[in-house]
Image 1 (cartoon, rainbow, N blue to C red):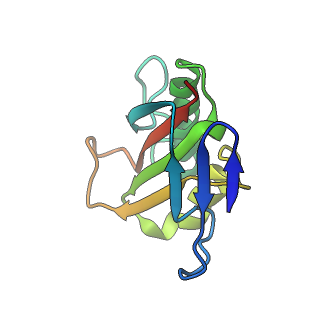
Image 2 (image 1 turned 90 degrees about the vertical axis):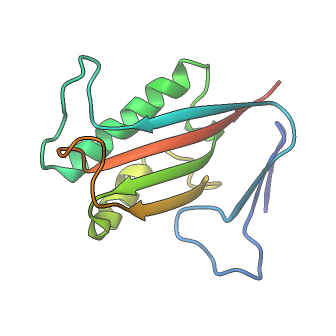
Length: 136
């Protein structure tokens, strides 16, 4: 269990299996909550990045999340939850590798990964939404 002075607590109960790269429970007691819509592999001009390339798309998605967080004065240390949607779950190791270059690996966010048949556009291979916490 780790405590953050800005009222976020990361907990992996001993009654649950140790998770690889995420935290089972993140408790937020005070502050502002920021919800970031699902980000896909579009650059600032709206062009697809990494057509048929899961790693390149994942990198772009995390860069988009980084930009969204920055717009409210936050960074990945403030992310408490990620919801990740992929069209091919066999790419999990690549996703983890890219994700771990962005998130706080000492206190990683709570996370959900779902394999889906298709995303909003056929060329999208991954979409990630985030919830962040900011102090009051």
